[in-house]
Amino acid sequence: NGNTIRQREPSTSKLTVKHMNKTTGEVHAEADLGAAYAADSGVDSWTRKIDFANGRLTVSDQFSKTSDTTATFQINVPVKPSVNGLQATAGRLRVNVLEPADAQLSVLDWSTLDPAEFKNGWRIDVSGSGDSFVVELSADES
Image 1 (cartoon, rainbow, N blue to C red):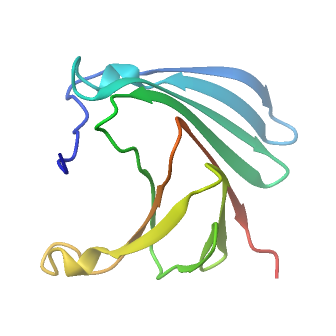
Image 2: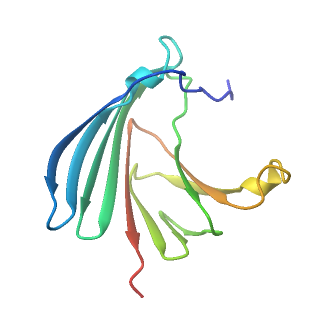
Image 3: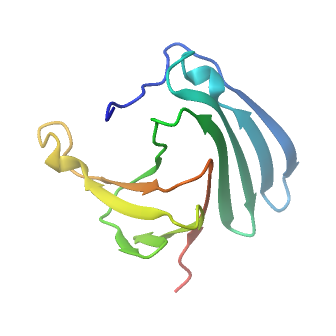
């Protein structure tokens, strides 16, 4: 109904590191984030996988939600991002949305909400159909 579903406080989510290589910095982990949402909140389950290798972080979310609930993947950045299709760039950070295929990216300037509290900063919102997000974050090498 247009209301934000807040995460429960306190809540405990479980993160399991599946693989870590201290030499290369490679990390693969999985988290069950479902405990952060109350029963009958509109979010039935939420899991996240993070894979960091070769200078790229891939975040893969799988979720189950009620039909009247919309999921949004959010990334906060300190500089104004530019959006081009399924990609956003904020400074040297490149955000590439791999799923959903019909993803739409939008940008929120935090200072427009409450300039007394938010002096600067932006949020990139990713929305789309389906029950997953796959987002790759990397540094622009140029």
